[in-house]
Image (cartoon, rainbow, N blue to C red; front, side, top):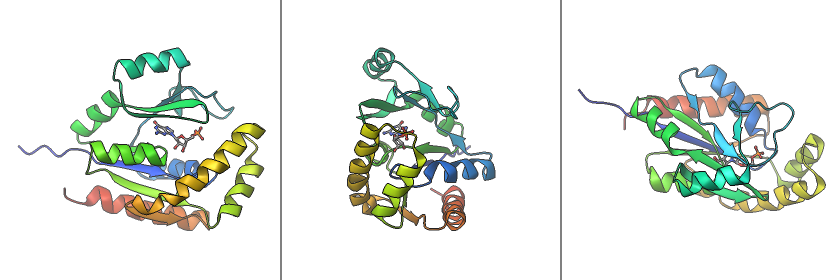
Length: 191
Ligand code: 5GP
């Protein structure tokens, strides 16, 4: 019997692009899609839950996992580590379940190197200024983190053409519909 592997979908976007809102909606509308819960060493935000949004680890715990090769990919940025668990991803795709990764642009490009069949979606803001405004209004970061995030956003935007699908988030509802339609097509696609 032919076993069909699950698909890997990575969604990337600069901070403050509305990515988390879009992903929450996608996960509600695609109940079979499994969200890959990353590990991170940054502190938990008030609205986040450990083991649901991220696994919040100490730096020592994270480094131990790097040394044990537990991550498919990992990045260190804004002074924090972020990583995708290898066993979680593998177990799900082997069972034919598609997995959604919410990771940064470098992480997404690394995943594609390891899994060439992975599909990469990039969500981008209508303009750089708009992104700066959104991040400023969000007020979840310290002044220093905020500066680092807007600097990084410039670099991330410059890599958007390396992605398979691009979605502009000018109007949130439209961006959700567009992303849903892309995901629907990817899931239905034969390998
Ligand atoms: P935040 O701190 O806002 O939750 O996430 C910061 C950045 O880290 C976002 O671009 C997010 O997509 C990315 N990120 C989250 N998990 C991972 C991961 O496992 N690997 C990589 N490379 N980036 C991640």
